[in-house]
Amino acid sequence: MRTETVQLKTSEQLVIKTLHPPLHDYADKVGCWGDVRDDLLNGKLTEWLFTPYFVGEIDGEVVGSMSYYTPTDTRDVGVVEFVQTAEEHRSKGIASALMDCLIRSFRADDGIALYLCTTNPIAGSLYEKHGFWYHVGDGMRYLAPEASDFDQTYLAYSGPAHSREATWGDLPRASVLYNHREPRWLIKDYFTQTFRETRFESHYVRLMRQIEDQNGAFVVLENREQRIVGTAVLKRFDTFHEQHIATLSFRVCPSYFDQAAELLAAAAEKAKALSIQGLQIYIADCDGDQKEMAKTVGFTEEARLRNQLYDGENRLDMLVYTLWMRDTTPLRKEEDYYGNRKPWQAERVAAAHTWRPKT
Image 1 (cartoon, helix red, strand yellow):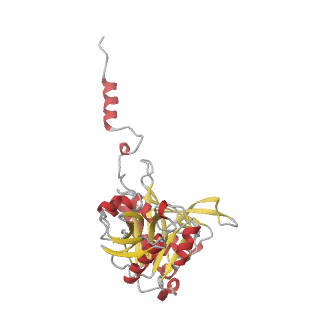
Image 2 (image 1 turned 60 degrees about the vertical axis):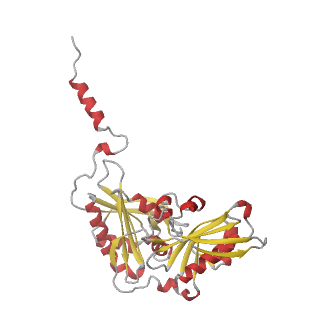
Image 3 (image 1 turned 180 degrees about the horizontal axis):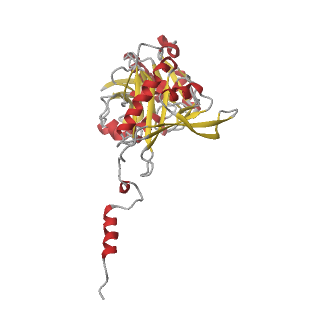
């Protein structure tokens, strides 16, 4: 634990502690996504995510905190989350002092880009003061002074990429990919309703949780700089009668368009292993390059939803592209699903059919 003291404008002494999971007694005093709260704050994700928490105390009382999440192995990009100040201690400069400490810590590990989001104009002013600027949707981004060419270089071609399963450490890396303005596909991620001008951070947490327990798969395309240049996530339909079908959403940066087919093929192999026979992709009709990528690996247009999308000016059709693979054996039984008859109920019904009243 690292500690420093800052004198606030009220002359109070703010003690800033830099804590790392497991947070023990501080776990219930800081913010975290509910879907991963226990795992992250108890230190179960440290293999993949480096998550320092900056906690401010006055006279031993926690009055504010914030954190950033960055890959454990590279620490070059991160997302800032859960900025909070106790209501009775606001306007004292606490959040500003914590943010200054956070950025210095991030920079000390050679970090170059931080992402966050806000809908609060007061918070927006605070972030502006510390070098953040408005980026995509309600998101903001901080770039280190030496990273002024970040948008042109970070996702530039750097030799062939390889596909692998996604990990929790890819949360910040995927945020870079999805928060980049290219490609200008209208649908960024169908599962989380992320579109062209929607920022992306916590969406990754939801995606990772949704595919657990053989409900789907998440594949990424990683280049030799350990940067995520493509993602493909698939999720099966949650009924007995549709479990052989999954929806797939994918994104690839322009410099790696040539490897989109490899990414989609890797996702298809994951689908087969999960007893999925059909993969469906929802694509805006205006996104011709995305349609061509899907066709390359055998997807065909199967349905057209007229005027399903609106780009701010025009109504656009949404297309359903489907890839059919070999027939599969169902992964789950009917009784595994909510609302269907359980085995013990079937046994009682069967027993009732064979029972005859005495005469």
